[in-house]
Image (cartoon, rainbow over all chains, first blue to last red; front, top):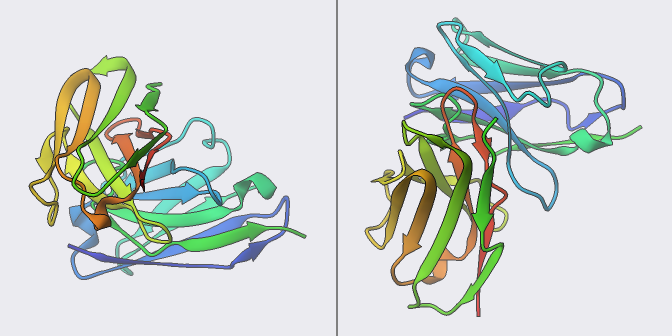
Length: 117
Length: 107
């Protein structure tokens, strides 16, 4: 089991880049796949992408051109960058860990990111 | 790209009743990498079922998953107060995706 904690700015301006960090504790970061998942206010879950320490990664086709996920095994952290954000990117962003690619066996508490000028 | 469609959109039931939730995939996948999550209001999603029928840690026996191919079902045999919330199915693996959710509300 791992504990996950998201961190990053709660407010991002339109057209700028959203950057979030997920801090992993409790076990080696190499044991699981790690995902970013978001939930717009009052709506359902949307998978953004996943990464494995081995380099295996994949992204939601609808977001692929704007998203990059990376991992720093030395710091037990992984990261989300989303470029050219708009109001439609306003959501709670969750980091999650799982035995399978994209699965959410364990979740962070979520970080609300609002896109507004 | 696989699309998951959940039905019904909402269920209104009383404690003690049986809940049956459906998740249908637009194309068949043979590895059964289908998960179910519960999200209570204001809380983080929690894994209930993985690989279609395996209970996650802490999932009570009254909650079970079944299905294969394109049709999957989550069954709650007798609803407890803590079972009310929104349930999502998810295909995980190479190209993960979520269903749109089924809300189970108290009648």
